[in-house]
Length: 201
Image (cartoon, rainbow, N blue to C red; front, side):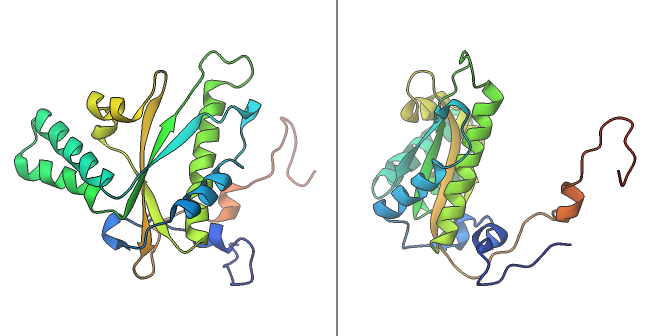
């Protein structure tokens, strides 16, 4: 049976974090010092061979307007209607802060497989967002077709990198609720049994 979090529970940040979308985020956004703390938490994720197969790029202040203009141009080039292109622009300008998540996967590494490197990136992303929640902020990860647009990728990525998406971050308004129903913990965690074993052995 799941155990509800309590204020004294050290797992409270993990047990209470939910994704918070842009319309529920307001200023203040995390400060540069806050972002460094979140990044320190991200660097504690499991990472075979210590490759750090990711990096982050903060988009704040006037940079949000420049990214919004890029989103609008890409949307129009993709054939979207002007009103949709303006909505794409707002995806950069409405959040108090965006943090791009960029993958640096070494497909030929002799120790860490590609899937292990992606797992490390996912763990870092989870740690980052949980740290933000623990510090009183809210946010979520966003992606979409813009991630694969050449103009957007080239604006963020160095050779050999790929753009995963963006975290939107700010101060949450109200109490967030989980978007998806998740199973009970005891439905996810079970005991392994070797072939031929019987329950209770």
